[in-house]
Length: 294
Image (cartoon, rainbow, N blue to C red; front, side, top):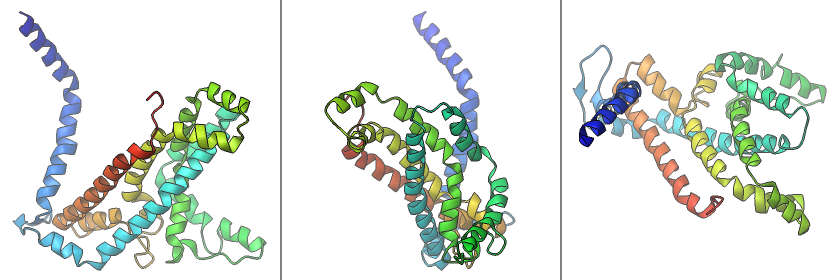
């Protein structure tokens, strides 16, 4: 009798989570496994699937555009992750002060992050237009000749990294919540002991928000390695492939050249790179992440 009741409860549970299970299997697990199989095949949408073993991977390591897109992707990650951390944490720290209009400021900073990328890209293109853009006009006012920004191989990646900070509002809210969770008593005790603002930040604030920093590093690194929308919308990967990210290169092989096998192999290289960096974060976190209460 007890077993039958437990069985009915299990069936009810499975029925309740079945929409998620079906969605996970159909839209995540199956494409994930299928892409691994396709990475060992010569597969175009219009032709039959042909098993080629590791040929796609051998071709990939001899492909100069793969190495260039990988280098560009790593440069984007190295620029986006630390800059986003400093900007988001800095804004959250400033908005943690007792201000009357703090809710308005938080909403104003968060709003750009929900603007669609293609709409924001139109603004960015105008901002960084070499001759009529706002940025170069301001620089010209101070007697500085601005660069070509998005049209320059040297400046295109820094420009995209700076432009990507429009989405810093989400991280800012997460850091704001983490700062609010720090007990005020710790600061009051530190003040009594004569600690200054910098010492309190280094000894209290920073250690207690390390779990949030770890979360930010993992999610932002994954996002940076998969960067696609801004370089695709702003430059299409140019000029001269200077902003060609691995995500754009995968997209071009999959949907422009319909070379699904090669695109799948590229995707697995990106997955392995992301997985390795995530594991490194988790392993290193044992040495620098502090969980309050442990």
